[in-house]
Length: 352
Ligand code: PBG
Image (cartoon, rainbow, N blue to C red; front, side, top):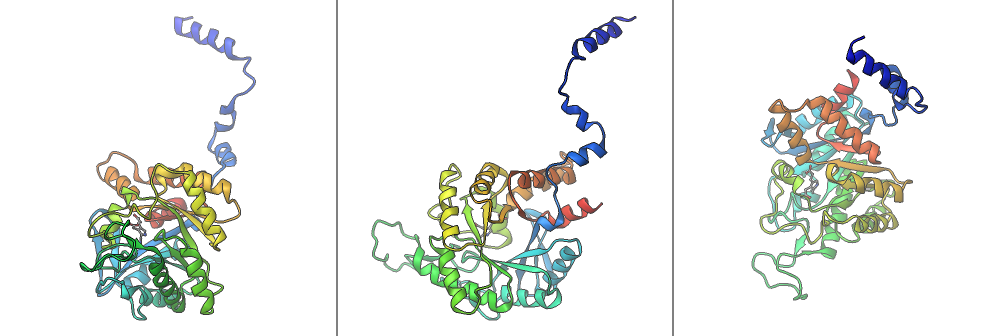
């Protein structure tokens, strides 16, 4: 007997008294798939689409595989997603013109309004979610009405910095936007501006106009994250000055996330969202534990997508495997639904 054989034999004898062997259930793929606790499915995905005026499509530099789409291209993208078993799209609009109020946001022939009608016309069964916020529509790029416009004098509260997003005047606009989307056939409205009282304001606006059956998916827990960089290029919605820290949350906080979620539940949110996802899996878990009865969405944001794409393009990671592992992690953490730019690819990988 060689030295190695001898040692192996001794070690084997030493360990044969083990009773608990988790590896027994990991021996074969058949066993592994039987024991799997979390299953990712194309039905979990909501696919984001950026819609703009004009013809054709143009790729977003920092988001390979993601495009600004004309209305007809958006319909085609929605059809492709639906064909892959993805039940839903979320729409973001790039308006023809921007102004301090973001008027195209609630215009009858606004870009998102056109896209909702076209998509619902071609694919009536698809669930169209719309993002309800001002930042893509305002000329200053902020998520609401500012206390100082074009050098005008600051409004009453002197304690607030110039360029502060005024909460309550913004609520009135969000209500108009939600009604406008619902009128075009949107199935779910998703306010993303982190204004206080946005869910109750939108609920009241919808109910007052006969849309009491339109659900609200609240971006209840949205952080002031640097992971939104590529999206701001895609949606042309970067703030012209300052940041969004006076309304979006501090990445260091989780107790505050539960408070935000609780308020939105009280205000009538039908579904909750945590955003971003990857650096906030603990937050997803905490919100799911606190509100198990509400469907929870996680937003796998643009920066998270860009990181995987960049590493994959360099040959440093396996794009399909890393993407599916990432999305599975979000679901395991507690997300029921995932808004993801990977949706189309992920659905294909899952199918084949
Ligand atoms: C606001 C909105 C943003 C995103 C979704 N909705 C941008 C922001 O809050 O600055 C970011 C999504 C992403 O990064 O993929 N309308």
